[in-house]
Length: 292
Image 1 (cartoon, rainbow, N blue to C red):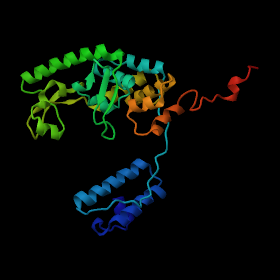
Image 2: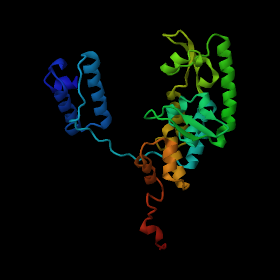
Image 3: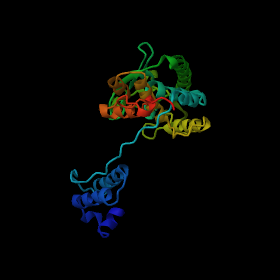
Image 4: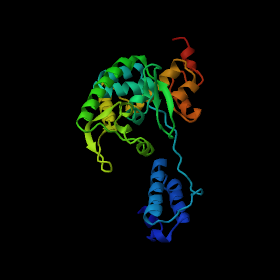
């Protein structure tokens, strides 16, 4: 609607790429909106023209894009991480441990499948992570026993589901066509399944979805409050803490980059600014002065 009012209530069908470019550039320059707001407006306009009006809008190179200002990540100390984990139990605790111990993103953790966990090689394979990339990260020894016990209970639940006509999970469409029965096999099951079954409308299969990310977000935020931590802690904060603590321990930044699945080292370097010693190990002059 703002796009229409900006151009004097002209019908969208009478406007095209120049008008879209002018409006989005105005949002960035005059409106001073956040980058996410401008991207949301761009997505809405592209949907309007391509899917509703069925008008092909060429790539808009002339748009002045709103810049996303760099923000330092919120990082918990080791004691704060311990305090948060102590206030969690069950599946959320195990998932939170993987966020901190293996550096997983929330959705990466939720979407883990049984075959992605390799106990023999102590590694976790992340499939189709951010940027649709696969990567390998470590399976920490601290969670192996608890994770193995958890998978035993998940397998029992899956066996019960199969016996009662369920036991299916969602698969990528190409795999569903090639291996129509794979969605019921144990290796494809979610490591962290939801508590309820649902019936897929297209296949009529009774399936389990993976645990929704909002469940983990809610309980971690509650644990942060209960621990009396004033920082704005979320599940993703555990991943930030994982990266920062690895760098504090002297691990190479390239190794941390690979474990996190970052595309560029500049993304990983943001964590060096959180370290107590700073990115170059600089100390304040006052720290070397004798006490008066």
